[in-house]
Each structure stands twice: as C-alpha cells, then as structure tokens.
Length: 49
Image 1 (cartoon, rainbow, N blue to C red):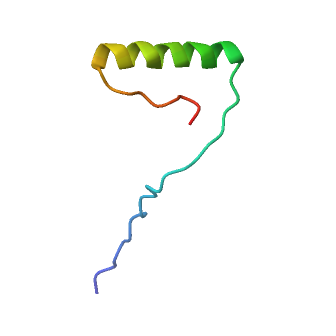
Image 2: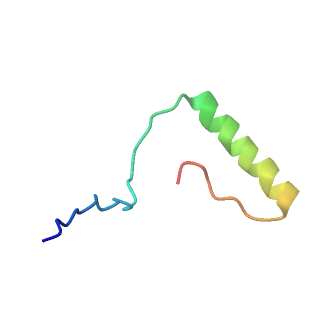
C-alpha cells in the first residue's frame, strides 16, 4: 500500500495590520500620492485609508 503524503495548505488570506508612523512620514506619503496622481492622471487614495 502506498503512503499518502499531504502537503501544507497555503494560507493566502489577507491580513490587516496597523502601523504607527511619525507625522513626517504621513506627510511625505500624502505628498508622494499627490505627485503620483498628477503624473499618472489617476486619483490616488489617501495613504492612511
């Protein structure tokens, strides 16, 4: 009789994490999003959302 080997099932569920960043990093991300939006012509969502 052949032995069956089961492999692990990949866990690909999304995971939500929360990170606290200094205010300066947030301002830089907002400025980057605005520049990116102007360059691509697309609306870039607020980095905090």
